[in-house]
Image (tube, rainbow, N blue to C red):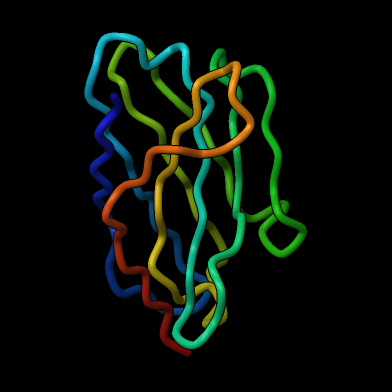
Length: 119
């Protein structure tokens, strides 16, 4: 069982930066691949970025590639999403998700953190 708690969301102007974090419970964090998803009002939840259990592999949605960076610190049981050059269309609730390395589906989700980008 993994519990995830996001933090760091807020209001930022277009072109600005923000880093959000996700703290995970448990002693086996390094056995989980992690990801960030987001959901804007009236839209379906979409994938943003993912990182392997060791941190050696990262994947990004085309819409954020080159602007967002996902990272993790396994000693601190935390995954981060650094967001640069933010755009109003990045406004959404951002969710952290975890999946055990042998499983293909993300089974554990946080409660979300709101990111609002003003134009």
